Structure formats: C-alpha cells, structure tokens
Image (cartoon, rainbow, N blue to C red; front, side, top):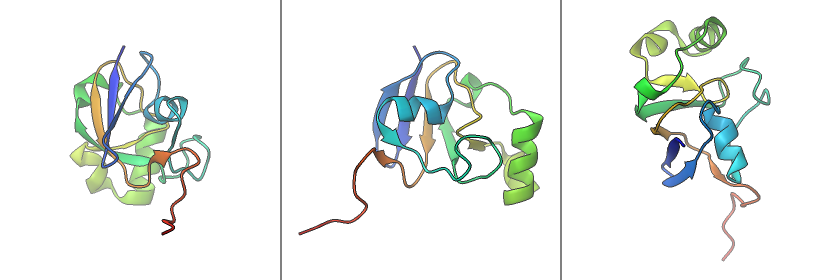
Length: 111
C-alpha cells in the first residue's frame, strides 16, 4: 500500500494503490484545499512533488492543460507540479501543499 507524506503538515497516510493524492488525504481525515471539488478544472489543489514522481501515473492531457493555462507552461515542464485531485499513486510519494490540515481544525488560534 503506497504511503503519502504531506509537508509542511508532516503527516503520513497509507493510500490504496491507484488512489489520487487528494482522495487519500481526505480519506485519512485531512482537508485538502480545492475550489472545483476535484474535477481538475482549477489549480487550488496543486501540490509540489518532492519525492516519488516515478510512482505516479503520467500527467493526462486535461491536467496538463489546466496547469498550463492557470500556472504557466514553464511550471508544467519542470514536472514537479501536479493536481492532487488527478494524480494517482502506485508507490510512496512526498508532496508539499500549504493549507492541508486535519478536517474540522480551525485556522484561527485562540489563546
């Protein structure tokens, strides 16, 4: 079973083989920022692939088009940026995504 490490939260979740990064995080009780609800038409779920890029399914045309239009072709060519809602894992992966938190956790700290 693939393991997904999410930084900077520094949490590791086990994911079913072939599951997307975002679905695996959600199933583990984490909130993953998204605007389109996982349809692959926005880039709010985009994450940086730090390790394990070879364990991911190749980027599809739709994902590539969305990333290119919203974030620029140069960032897509670099190969580290992926849409978490579209990226399927088949091995261990480490990603960086700001805003990921435990579901239900408040963004405000109360003293």
